[in-house]
Image (tube, rainbow, N blue to C red; front, side, top):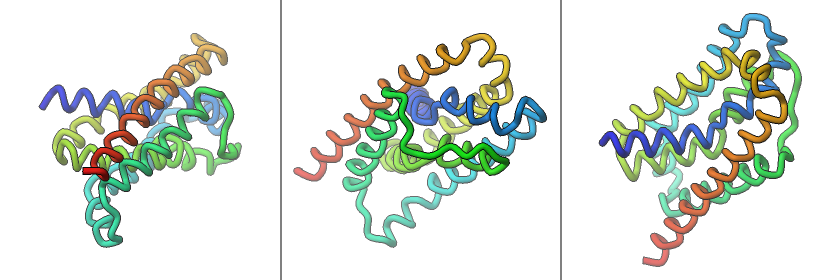
Length: 188
């Protein structure tokens, strides 16, 4: 089970990409009350993640959506997010306001990619490994946001962009795997 938890945690961390949220977080907080702002943003992210972890399967079952469709659709969404990270171009508009903290929580940390992946991980590995993997990922995201000012000073804008692009490349490989798994399942 430990290997599953690690695999899920690494994938969720890459998909969440908290480093990519640093510029918007700094803009929203202007380095004031970073601890409370990080708690709020990660709290929103945790709510969305846990909602779909525990209620996503019953919700999708009620809507008649199959896991195969979720894998293919989730893979496509992850691929689009990966392209955004790799190319450094956003499909979404950033809003510099207090609402930005909610935007960091969702869709930036727990957007469609995390939602789809969480539900797929629950189907593939179960609730317990997915839950145990989610907690350290959310905590590490909180640490990164909490100390985003320091991280930004150490890495600089270019360092953060490089990290986000590397995360995007890793995310693209996860997306391709999801699509391939979904197509295999649909064909069999």
